[in-house]
Amino acid sequence: MMMNCIVDIVDDLPGLLAILPRVLSEYLDQLPEKASLSEIVLDLGYKPEIRYDKQVHKIQHLPEITQKDITMAVQKVGAFNSDNRAGIERTLHRISAIRNRNGKIIGLTCRVGRAVVGTIEIIRDIIESGKNILFLGPPGIGKTTKLRETARVLSDDFHKRVIVVDTSNEIAGDGDIPHPGIGLARRMQVPSPNKQHAVMSEAVENHAPEVIIVDEIGTEEEASAARTIAERGVQLVATAHGHNLENLIKNPTLSDLLGGIQSVILGDEEAKYRGTQKTVLERRSLPTFEALIEIRERDVFAIYHDVKSSVDALLRGFEVNPEIRKRSDENKSELETPIKEFSISMETPSLSTEVLSIFPYGISVDTVYKAIHALRVSAYVSQTLSEADIVLTVRSKLRSKSKIAQILQGRYIPVHVLKRNSTSHMVKFLRNHFQIPDMDSEQYEESILEIQKICQRVKEEGRFLDASPRGAYLRRIQHQETEKFSLNSMSVGEEPNRRVRVYPKQ
Image (cartoon, helix red, strand yellow):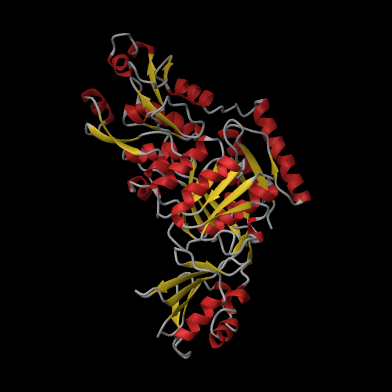
C-alpha cells in the first residue's frame, strides 16, 4: 500500500553560516547542494570539512582553520555546557567542541538542525495511538527530528499537554524561547546530561503532562524514570541509540526498557515441551514501551507494534518480522506487511485477530493447511506447544487421562475441540475465529458498499476518511476495493476498533 506524505524542511542555514569564517561561509552559501548539508567541521590546522548524509569532503582550496577562526565562532554561539555542546539562539543548530588537555577549544563540529514538517506522517497512526513509543537508531539518522515533529503534532493537532525534556537543547533549540518546530509544547531544559532523569521525574510530578518527550535515554536512572512516567499513565515518546531491537535486548543498561531480561531454570518437562535447554532467558516484567520503531535509514522504518510479544519471541529463538514502511523520493509511503508475527506471552495468552499459531493434536497437519489455504487467513501450524496460541484437537483425544490433558494441566492455552478431523470442520473453525462472513451475507455486502461510498467522497473532498471497524478479512476486502478507485489505504487503530483509512492520491 502507498500514501502520499508532504515534507517541508526549515533549516535557517544563514544563522549557522554567520558564525563560520567569512571565506567558508561565502563558499557554502553558493553550494547548489547546501540544503543537504548535515555537518561542518572546523579543526585547528586542517582544511574545513563538510559532510552530507553519506559523503565527506575536505575543501582543499580554502585556507586551514586557525585558532582565530575557532575563537570567533565560539564567541558567536551560546555557552558550552558540561557535555561540550552549545547552540545558536532560536535555531536548531548544534555546536560541539573538542578541547585539548588544558580545556582550550581546538575543534568544532557544527550540525545543521532542521525542522522537518511531515516527516512522521508515515507513522502518524502510531503516534496518535497513545502508546509509549521508542525510536531506535544510530546517531545522525533523524531520531531527534522525529521527536520534534511528534511534539508539534501532538500539541498542535491533538491539543495535548506536551512537555519536551530537552537535554543540550537539541529538540527545541538554544535560548529560553523554544523553536517553533515543537509547536505549542512546553520545554524543560536540562542543566547537564546527568540530570536528565531528575528533570523527567520533575516534569511528570509538577506539570501534569499528557505526553513527555525525551531524547537519548541511556542510563539506568533514565530507564527507571521512564518506567515511572509510563506507570503514571503519561504517554512517553523517546529515543535510544542502537541499531535494532536485538541490540537493545542484549544491552544490560537499557534492556529494562523492554521489561528486563532474567535467566530462568525450567523443569525437565517444561524444557522438553519447549524444546529448549533448562536455562533460558525470559522477560522479567512488562516493557516500558508498547511500540518500537527502528529507523533503519532516514526514510525507512521497521515497526514492532507489540514490543512485549516481539521480545518474548526473540528470547525463544523465533524470527520476528516487523512491519516495514518506506518514504520514497516522490514523498510516497510504501507499507510492507510482515510475513508473520508471534503472539507469545508470559501472561494468559489471548487469541490474535491477525495471526493465529495452531498446535494440532490428533488432527492432520494437511487438514489444517488445506483450510488455511482455502480461506487465505493469517495462520500457521506451530511446531511446539509453547509457541501456540491455541490447541486444536478432537473429543476422543481429550479424555481426562490422555497425554494432551496431562500436558495442558496448569497451562493457560485455549483448547478448541472439533467435531471431526475434516477440512470442512477446520474451515468452519477458522471462519468463526477470523470473523469471515459468507460472500452473500449482509455484513460482506455492507462493507463493500461502505468503502465504495468512502472512496467516492475521498475523491470529491480530497481528504482522508475512515471506514467503520471491521475484522481482518473484511478490511482486506476493503483494501482491495480501494485499489479499484486508484486511492491509497491503510489499517489504523487497535482491535476491536481497527479500521481502514482511505487517502487521496496527490
